[in-house]
Length: 158
Image (tube, rainbow, N blue to C red; front, top):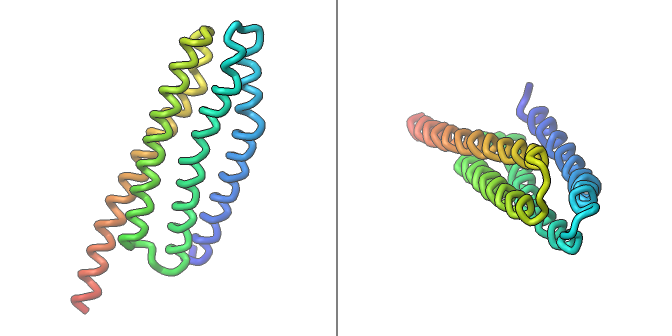
C-alpha cells in the first residue's frame, strides 16, 4: 500500500468515525438519557446529564482533527516526524482525559439516579476503550518520535 493510498484509507476511517460519533451524540446518548431518567425522582437532572455527557464530544472531535493531521502528514511522506509524534501524544492525552471524565460523570450519576450495576456496563466498556486508545497512541507517539530521530540522523549522515 502506498503512502497516498494509506493516507486516503486513514482519512476514510476518520470520516467513518466522525459519522459514528454523530450517531452516538445525536441519537444514542439522548435515548440513553431518556431511559435512565424515566420513572425517576431525578428526572430534573436529565438536561444537566445530557449537557455534561455532550461535553465528551469535544476531546473526541479534537482527537479526530489530530488524526486527520497525522493522515495528511503520511500522505506528504512525513510519516516519521516530530509533528506526527506530537499529534499522537495529544490524541493519547485526549483519550485519557475523556475516559477519566466519562468515568467520573457515570459514577456521579449512578449514585444520583440509583440503578442496577448493569447501568455501569456501557460506561465501563467505553472507559476501557479510552484507556486502550490512550496507551496505543502514547506508544505510537514514542515510536514515531524515535523513528523521526533515527531518520533525521540518517539524513544527516548521507
